[in-house]
View 1 (tube, rainbow, N blue to C red):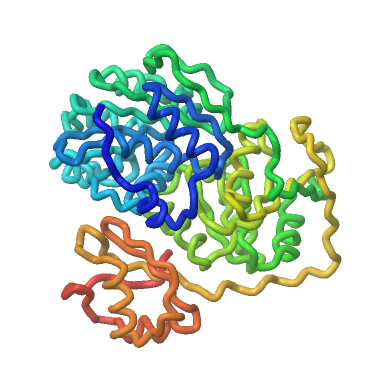
View 2 (tube, one colour):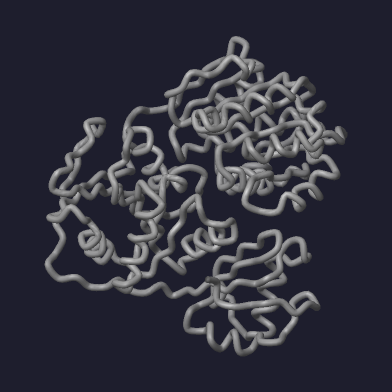
Length: 440
C-alpha cells in the first residue's frame, strides 16, 4: 500500500494537541513496519488518534473507492471517531453507519463511496448485503474496542463482514483490556502487540467509598450529589429500569439530571448527551452503555450507584474521568451488605456526608431544539447568526451548539430563554420556518 504524505504537525494543530504521546508514537511506528497490529492502551489515553493517523497514512486521495473500514461496538463510539477524523482536516470523505436512525440517510451518503466508513456490526452487515457498501477496495480494517465487538452477540455479523473483505492487507485491533482471545476469522498473521495498559489506577483518579445505612441507596445518592455541588457527575446503574427510577427520584428531589440507556431512540440519546455536554444538566444517570465511546471533557465524578460486576467494567466506567491530564474521582456507594470488590487494590478513602443537605445551584443553561440540521444546509454559524440577529443574544448567552443531520441543539443562558423564544417565534432560519423549542 502506498503511504499518503501529509503533515502530522498540521493534524495535531487541527486537533489542538501539542505532541503525540508515547503510545501514539509506538502505534504509528509499528503500523509503518507491520501489517497487523494489536494496540492495548488505557481508556482516555488517545487510542483514536493512535490508529487514525496510521489509517490516514495508507489512504490515497486519487482513489475513488472506499479504502478503510472501522468497526465499533456502539453508535456513540462511531460518532466520536468520525468527529475526531473530521477535526483532523484531511479532506477525505467519511461516513458513519449505525442503527437508531434512517438507513436511507446512510444510503445517500454511500452513493459516492466514502474513503473511510465507520460503523457498528449490524448496520455495516446490512449495507454490505444490500450492496450499498462496496468492499473490493477496502485494504485497511480497524476493530476498535475489539473485546466488545467480538462478544457473542456480534460474532455472526463480524464473521460475515470480515469474510466479505477480500482485499484487506492491514489490520489494527485496539482495546483497553487484554481479556479476550482473538478468533481466527479476523485473519491476523503474526501481529505485533503493543501493550500500554498500565494495570494501575491513574494517579489523577482518586477512589472513594460511601456507606449507605439502607439497602435502597437513593437517599444517600441524593445527599452525595448535594455534597458534590454542581460539578459534573455520571451515575452508573446496572439496569435500564434502575436508571429511570434513579433519575425520577433525583428529579423529585429537585436535582436536574438526564438519563441515558440503550432502549432510548437516537434523538433521545442525542438530547440527553447534549444537555450533559453543554451544562444544561450536570448529572447523567446511565447504564454501562456510557462507559465506552463517550468523550465528554471535564467529567469530575464517577458514581458507582451499583457496584460494577467486573474489574473491566470498573475500569471502563472510571475511564470517563481523569482523561489525559485532568483529574477525577470515582465514588462507590455500598449498602450494608456490600463490600469493596476484591480487584480494587489501591487505597480507598471513606467519606462521610455532612448532616445538613444543601441543594446545588441549578444549571445556568437551557438547551433549545431546532428542527433543522446538516441536511437542511444549517451549520453552527447559521445558528449563532440567527440567535444573535433575531433574538439579540450576545456571544456569552450562547453556549455549545451541536448540529446533527436533521436537527440541532444549542445551549442558551436560562435567563434569556423565554425572551429568545418570543423573539424567534415565526422567524425563519436559512429562509425556512422550523420548529424551535426547549429540548425535551
